[in-house]
Length: 302
Image (cartoon, rainbow, N blue to C red; front, side, top):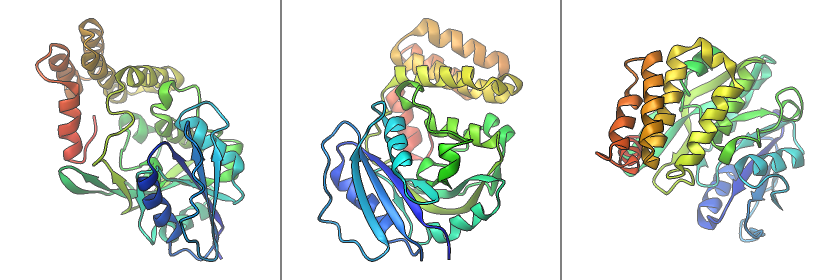
């Protein structure tokens, strides 16, 4: 019999999308118990009494008891969890019915810290399959964020989150990149494994809470560069993050900082396209929102 699973769903003012996410977790073809911990961040608690639950499924609702934002909400759920395994699902995403059945066996290996899956991205431009790598280590994640490893697909051991791995970093500005930080920390303890199949549905056909919060993106990514000194040993990885910072500064209309970070990007990796896009945005030739929207329609991010 596989281990029971707790699932943390942090939510804010999206009741219909929340119910779709909860239904997909409830309807897992998984023989063990699943408790769903719905953490309301900055909004009143909805008792969700309209959702029917079969045997082996339960829902608990609570308010965020930590720092406001996604990181604090997830940590509230982690601390409340009853089961040995713990997953995350954003309130606007979904799980396919066989996700847990195919994913949980990866955690039988004690060296696996995070089990993930590939993703199916639903955007304004259609449906895009993004297959995850079967394994990822620290060097892989420094080179690339590997966006196929989406937090809505993560399952971890509850004891790791409460112990050696630690909670979600609440000091991250605007909680931006908290999932990336968690992956980087995980690979310093072991490795990440994934079912390559797209078993998690990620919705980009709606407004993201981060889509236009450019200063939060700047602050979050700068924090990550400082927190993880290993980036200094990866020119490609450093340039990728620096290019994103340059782009965000460009979207803010801060031409000086956009140029400064673009130069820093190109010094590490002259072929990094984000630096050139950042300069175009900073000069006002194109809006940052336009670039991000075009990429999202193709199932890509900046």
